[in-house]
Length: 388
Image (cartoon, rainbow, N blue to C red):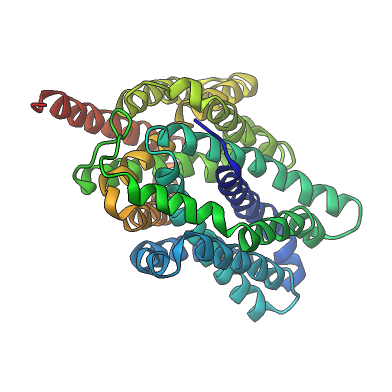
């Protein structure tokens, strides 16, 4: 796989998304104090992101087809920065508008980058998406540290949230506006390729089963992202400062494995990768859920992150490949799956937790993994049985 300038631009765009998205979790408490509102009111901000994903999933495809990947990416990055700047204001109405604009820009990135990488690397889509998400995962780890460092230095949370991404955004916009030829060459190459040569498991096919698989994968990921810190606090009596650090073990596990995704997925059927990933995630989750001490639970969460790491890239690669002549619309449907999962699964876990307790509610995660593994195995078996 050739990691050319265009590919690196797409990686950087997804990395900026990871920083801004996961940074929202770190800024909610200081934002609540700044605006003088309740926790319930400030908890509405992450929900705007899920709504933006659904909107983009429904309408993002036609927009990207009309303006193209390059201009779509310019619009997305501009929206992210404008939204982040509004979020950092001290006027509540502007912060709400900023969260919505940030969500729409970020959702457009989620819909656009997979389609562009799939068009650029049809044989290595899983690896390219894995590496792109590795960049995003490492950036996700930096966001809470940057916000916490800025607050500790007395500079305010907005400095830690904005200062690292504004130079990156400016550089990306300059490259996108000046390097038009890279994108035109990609389009010409795609137009000349009369017989696409997708990698194993990336053949065209029905979209719905692949959409369901992606929905399950994202549901597992965000149940652990959103509620792992609460689990450490409730199950092991961890303090409010240490709980987010321990919960970040999940993101660390994902980042490390995604960084090696090109080696782990090369020549392998993405559905085989997904089944193996489900097994590793299940082992890690059991340790996280059942281990009686904090260190064992943290190692289990790290292992669960390593397993979950390749579920999203492999599932998204198959989804984008389902409609090779309309990758933008397929990728938009992927954003829709992510929006439904992020808005639905963690909320369901919270509702079950109120009724039965967090430990019992967390059993939704292995249930989702089992369903995903069974669905993947059934689909893989049906594919193997098809005549050439």
